[in-house]
Length: 427
Image (cartoon, rainbow, N blue to C red; front, side, top):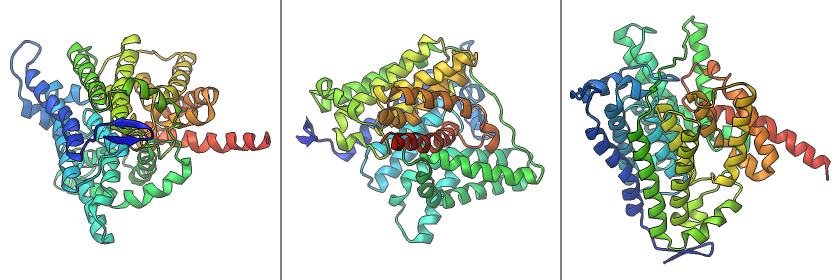
């Protein structure tokens, strides 16, 4: 029995946590096998769909469900999930809240921008950085997992006409390696800008790196333009699968901690500012329960606005679920979400559009602002977030998948000093 902050739960070893997480890619593979059918019932080529995903430029917004089909998309996500689980096991990582957040985020973005090809150069770059600095890969694997937000630049250079075909692939891989090499020192410095109020710190860092790379390319008259490839069919089987998986997480939480319903209210007291690791503060039982509950709340919202669960939305849902192990809970997320929805209504956005839905889901990166300063400031931050996130994609050309993390960093960096100045004036 483990006691964490007056919470009693069963001892959960690292191997068991890895198994709990592995259920997701395993389930995705099984689901993919069940979905290997065309709309007319004829089998389609899974490998053909995977190749379309791998060989497509994957800048914002490239939905793999539309590019390669449902089955191939879920296989791609499963493969990336297994790769990251292998690395976590190989380097004997302690599975904390931020690692869970990283795993779930990468899993989600494997439906939208990341594939088994374009992430590998970034991992290689991280490995070379460790070799150069004479440190263990174990120390940076977390940052490298998140830094795959820059994976689209590998695909964009490799599979478009920016460079002649024999050289484009090589240059794309080398640029990915370079990003993996430089992202680690940059990320630690960028944290100071938003002071921990933006949970997607690598998203902000990637926005800066993406802006630099895009500006260099544009200076040579090479323009990277965002696209809008979306899967628009409402597939009830995907929604059902997600609902089952999130209930599974809640049941896991209950199995680990029989008093999880009583203990869950304690999570609402946390502001969520980095570093707020719920596995360390409240244990794995409450953490997994919160992850499942936040996933279900995300599905309820999407259903309420008649939205479509496609690739970008899957990325948003899994990012919310992942960071529900590291800072997010219903109380600090609600004001931000309300602010984004309110701003969307004032700006006459379609509430069911994929663009607004992913803005709502990803905006919870600044949940610590609401947790620290209250509902009013949280609503204001959410409104400001929507104004920024809809405009800044052009700056980095869509090669940073964590566009909301970039916007969240700017919101926090702009808003927090002003709020603190007024609060000091009240003293």
